[in-house]
Image (cartoon, rainbow over all chains, first blue to last red; front, side, top):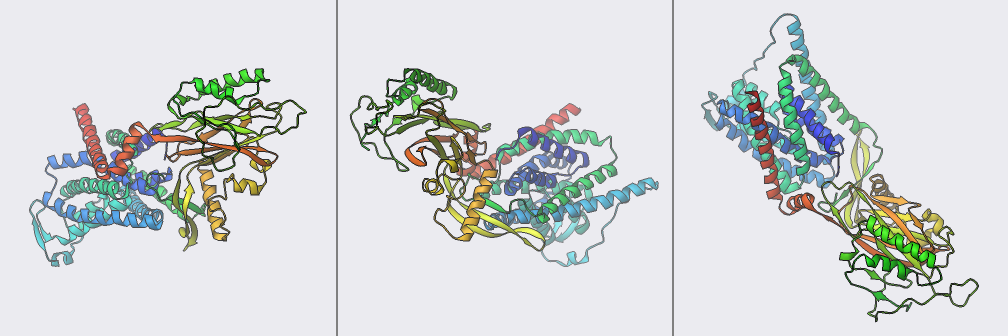
Length: 300
Length: 327
């Protein structure tokens, strides 16, 4: 596989810029863009995990230093996360053997980008309307989930001031770990709302704890993809990471000059566009209906 | 054919290149052509980064089609028999033979490898053609990469989306194939001869498989390989540059699968194969590319650890640098 170096650096930079600007991980943009470039989807996913490690580690460290990581909660999430990752990497292996991985990843991305883009768009539109009306942007509170308190295996999470069953965080962790493995994403946009609305964790702790879990789960996913599927491309990862970290710094600096809801709106448009493009490729009759998979490692 | 055989497993200097062209011209009556071809071969050698010095050059004479006769260990003979090349001397003309070599025998695939071109050159012994332009002979050069088992899949529309549905496994799919000839191969010989010598880009994957599905899938495989630049045909990629000296070029794309290449050259006249020869080119990963490959496939756990460490390091360094520049 050979792709232009500057294109990859530029793409890493653009995704990094967006993530710095808006404050999202960007893994969910990186993988589909790599696939559009012609990188095999499995390699795009495996290498995407390495990129997520690089883009989340500094944030995780900063949150930890500020005391915003509930270590106990993080470890419970991580236990579930590692289990989910193991399962996900195995599922990738099986799907690749069946020749259906490309289809599954495309469907997963259509669903993910469609829902994330849709949610971001409605949220940013209503925030813009609120601002225009002179009011303050609304912050929603989730309703209490009583059934969660009925589950067994209760644990005390002192930092979060919670006394809840370990099962919901384990399940959340496993679900996100599974997605991390098959989609090459960090999954912060799933864990953070789940921790806040489902478990009623304080927002600052939810953000810090999710970053803590993302670093370790993505590192585990990278390691497992490299070991079990040989789908981590180190050279590709280096280029994306170099572009990404520089782009993220520029994006963070630029974010002070732009209004948040406008940014989120633009990002929503972009996310929906990428999602539509993935969907279009599924529906459109392919120019070539046949494909070849070489069964010797390293020769594809 | 019991013609003299010279096997030279020696490690000589570039002189060999010149010697090659000299031996190629056993007839002394074409001195002008001889000097021209010698210099040509030497310039090929220098331009094309030739590595004759470190390779085993084997030169054999004789007629053979697709199978290579094992060279008997004969005494180093003197020159080839002089052909009665005077016009109007019909008494049993010596049959043609060819000698070939490639411009580069070892190609390093590094991380910046962006494709290259190899030159296959050689000469016709006992050439009967009057000039390079006469078109008396045709040359076909076919280069085969390694083969590997592969699955070819076909998409069908299921519930409105395109899904891999049918599949077929091929045990020995050539991963790379290049064809260079003095003119389009179907003008050189008829289909049966081309097929028996495996000179086509599309139906050699399973020769003799008349099954309709196999035909469909093997021609699809060839089509995809052509699209990806891995099966290349150059209709006029080979040319004579003298009465007997010829050269052909073949493009090795950046995405060429790493493995040995077998170069086969066939000499045609009047739709028939007069002689054939093979040579080989080694492709090997080198430098960083080789290091990465070895780690990825032989030490995948260490490779994964390296990837994680690199990602952690890059993330931390970037934020440290940025924080310092902020304060």
